[in-house]
Length: 147
Length: 142
Image 1: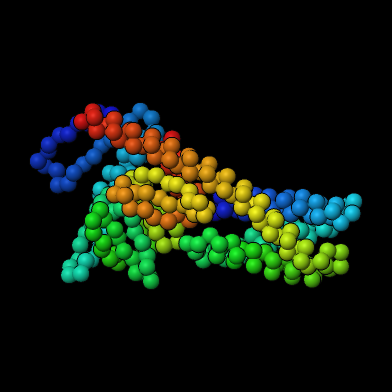
Image 2: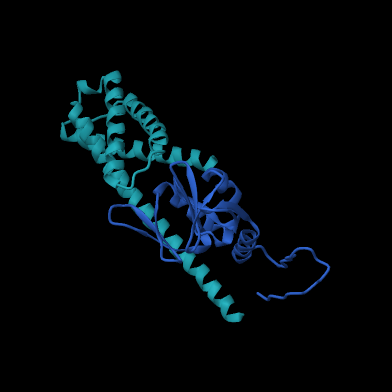
């Protein structure tokens, strides 16, 4: 992959043109990352409203009908419900791993089965999350699109 | 949706098959030599109801495998006892044996599921490794 950048003072926003011969997994992965950088989620911390890039989000969890967005070192509260965020963020590589949790597949490091037939996902920041068997196929499907 | 329907059909027929084999073994142990055609369809009906019930019960998740397994076995045993009472299964097979068959079928199905989960996990980790290598290559090029 060759990366070229070109400065154009006339442009009002960044323009990305991806030229390719064949659509493949690498291209889809790249597009999902670009999409994630361009997708913003409205959140709030204790004091003020914050807008975060989807690419910076590690995972999103719903607890007692409240939605929390987990960044590398911060936790924010999101306005939308989990299912709404799932719809909005599926093109950016977010996938459901349990009834109450969505993860950014771009930060997923590995998945392992535990002795009690449960599963655990490890993220690139070392955090571990519980995966439900039912959603394992969704993770597989999301990665299958890489072909 | 289409994928869910296919999974439903596959799982229903898979558990129906396992149940019929378990039934065959239990019947042979009791000295039986044949099975009624209606038993096959009653069994299929019970399995369809079971998987429909699972669609509801599996909305509730637990971190503990034993709680989920106990809930599953309770649902299966409940449906089998209802079907058994309606179709008169207990005139030939005691209710306790039916429940034992439920537990055996559940254990065999769970073993199949463990293999599937292991295969999915292996595939996912291979794909993640592939992605990580790709990212590393690009980082080196930069």
